[in-house]
Image (cartoon, rainbow, N blue to C red):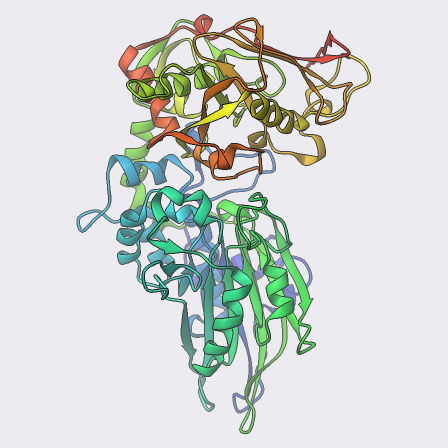
Length: 603
């Protein structure tokens, strides 16, 4: 409910409760200063990133308003209120809105309108409808834009009132950009020449690995830095007075890809440092918050502004550029700054809620639909530090799907194993009726199933990498969960549990031992696993593509790749059988120990 223009202005400047008033240093710049004659003014560029299919402040898996414990809110409906308030205060004619990617994947809403009710001429994607209402000027492509395939992405692109940009997404046949590389927006000023703002889009080269099944042979993805060096000069030649890069690449050098690509996954700060004539970079992909950061360009000595708003629409980046015009020099950026605004401080935009309420309700009905019953409750709350029926269920379904696909192939006699991560400790299957939402909560990502061939030695190496997730311990405890898991900040999705399908795979994880020598007693069906023993192993496409940089898995021979979504396999398993018996999956195949003594973990 945005209310009147006066109310929207109050959201920005209304004392202690105003959004900008509470935003920290720089809040006094709510009204841009101008020199008489119109030769100086302040341009505002707003930025979002990693929206991941969030329109409303709603948790579809919990079936309630979103709350992450920090009381942040999410979604485009909240962002819309902020954007409209800023435009009201600054003037829409000198305000631009840009996104840095990962838009159409990540929630049941995104899944529903990709797989259940597909978009097209008669159905507009809710994210497209919401972003059009916000009036975006451009958006860079993220790596997750390719998760549902290129046809869905192209359909989404056609529904947008603004361009999708990706200078480093190239047509494999021609080597030319498969999407628009950049756009130049004209900001008109009375009494002076118009300001031309160039917006360059750069996406993540990891798409070549993560989205291989969709893009191989169709598109290539050269490095962010390499393409910025090529395209920023073109933007300047096209007349851009100010250059803003929307880069779906984290600020600092890091990668989950290991040696699989010659290009870094995250390098926005390096781009700012190495490529002249960039004024600012809207950073995406890393899911971190950068309110304001400056990087000095080596060639020019100029400071380049970097900002990254928090993911899912929790924050809106607000960049300000003080510009001065001279007859000889044209427009010149004399100063820049940025901050982030919290969407939790504002209500949802009534226009968005009215337009998309039916779409939202359709998804709520879908995720709450009954698909079976469970004999008892089954929780993932302890899955990160002990063997649970919940993760056993995931591994069972993955293993069965792989085994079925191997029938009639040379690999059908191989023993089947499965690997899965404890994605969501809040996930739980209730006793009694089970819904899509209940089952989907066990698997938070739209990963697809791969089957690969691993030897016993390779499996051991893989598990050693996995159990580096645990903190070294000198005694068996008792210990609190957080004192045992997530060593060095390792997220839960970079820890895998292994399980056998027709025969148990058993092992201990000795936390008194150094990383690399922790897995002991590894056995299959009671027999020690031999180094040359061969297994068929079910894994996610994320892991197979190099996500987490686990050894051997990215180069292992592929036995299965049918693009079957793991989450949907879980849902269909319950739907077909109609019943879950958690006792069927409840067995202790692995445990944490210290010098052979079981670790006691007390939540």
